[in-house]
Amino acid sequence: MKFVDEAVIHVEAGDGGGGCVSFRREKFIPKGGPDGGDGGDGGSVYLVGDVNLNTLVDFRHKRRHRAERGQNGMGRNMRGRSGADAFVKVPLGTRVRDADTDEVIGELLTHGQRLLVAQGGFHGIGNARYKSSTNRAPRQSTPGTPGERRTLQLELLLLADVGLLGLPNAGKSSLIRSLSSAKPKVADYPFTTLHPNLGVVSLGSKRSFVVADIPGLIEGAAGGAGLGTRFLKHLSRTRLLLHLVDLAGFEGAQEPAEQVRTLERELAEFGQDLADKERWLVLNKIDLLDAQTLDQRREAIVRELAWSGPVFLISAATGSGREVLAEALMQRLEQLPHPLAADTPADGDDDAPWHPLD
Image (cartoon, rainbow, N blue to C red):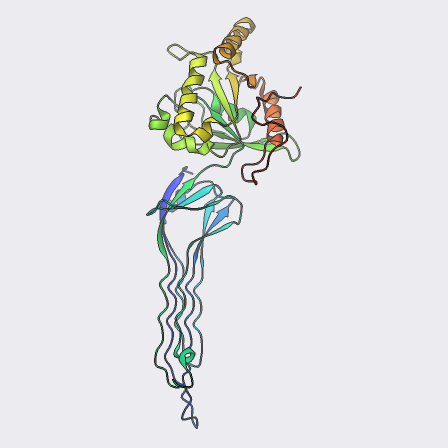
């Protein structure tokens, strides 16, 4: 299925039914009086979070969503039937904006959560409601009010615990394949990954987390170069970033330390919140280096960057270092507050550099 993370839809709530002007007409009752009933309320439009969806592709084909109109009132004091509400399913992580005002209406973050996006019209009043001691035969009624009509911009932000960050061919797709059952495409050319991938890493009973792999970034990504400007937003809800670096390198490639600095600049340009996220350094492709060269390059990178956070050595291709990295991630995520929970302070100082437990 094609991955689509943005869509524009039109929603129309139902109009309220009009009130009725009617008078009671029965044999032997010459002065029956007014008996026009009220109309029914118009149906509203709701967006509903659905855990079984992972893309907005359906909205490329169906852009207009309508709720039912309220029925008009009838004689004999019969009220019209209210219109049925419309429920539109969207994937979790969907942010909803009013396309005309750019106002954020809300976000769908849990399964079954409902968000009212278009209010149905109010019912009209029948003439029976206007009768009084001085107005015994009212002939006035009111029409129902129109339902809301809005153009909405839907934006999907993936819900993941860990985000993979790196230049093209750093090995992000290979790592997510190694850690989880996700099967993104892997090839030896840049931009093999064209859309985000999610994988669930399981470490036993009730111990698991979700990893997000986005297309590789290049210099200028935050300004629109490559695919980064479109997909960097998917890292905004992650709790921790893994910065993958190709330790082996290839002819014409940037030095590992410079690769890190390049992406640090892109994160800062995209948004300070993203730049301030906790980030671990993961040096990949260690299977292509001998032990002495590996130690020298690791020490050089840490020294040049003055890196004080965790550093991991892995080979996404062979799986070396995979278990150590996964267990360290799980331990850290168990300490960090969930981004969808209330903002409560976590145990310990989260601003201090963290290192995996021995």
